[in-house]
Image 1: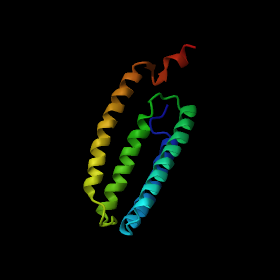
Image 2: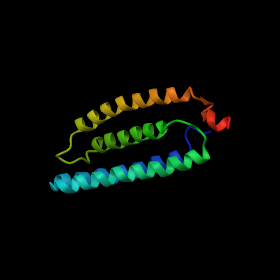
Image 3: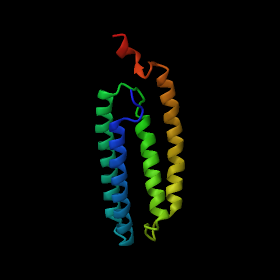
Amino acid sequence: MKIVSRNLLIFALLLFIYTILFRFGLGELLTAEKWAWVIIISVVYGAMIFFTAWTTGKRDGINNFLFDAGFRWNLTTFIVWGAASEGWFLLGLHSAHETIRVVHITLLIWSGFLILHLILFLILRRRTIKGIHKTNIFE
C-alpha cells in the first residue's frame, strides 16, 4: 500500500502538462476574445482530467488496495492545479482578461469541497482495516 503511488505521480505529471497547455490556450483565446472556444477548451480540459484520473485511479485500485474514495486524486488535482495556476500568474503569462482573484476564489471554494471529501474519507476509513475494505478481507 503506497499513499503516493506510481499511478498518482503519472496523473500529477499529466495534469500539470494539461494545465499548462490549457492556461496557454485560455490566455490566447481570451486575448483574441473567442468566447465560444474558451468554453470548448474548458470542457475538453475537464474531460481530459476526468479520463486521466479515471484510468490512473482504476489502475491504482487494482495494484494498490488503499481505499481512499478518490481523496488522493482530488488533493493532487487541487495542489497541482493551484500551483500551476499561481505560477502562471507569478510569471506574468496571463492575459488581460484573467485575474488572480478568480484562481483564489476557485481554490477557496474547492478547499471547502476538499474538506468535505476529507470528512467522507475519514468516515469511510473507519470501515476499513489498514486501508482495505472489510468486505474484501472477510469474503
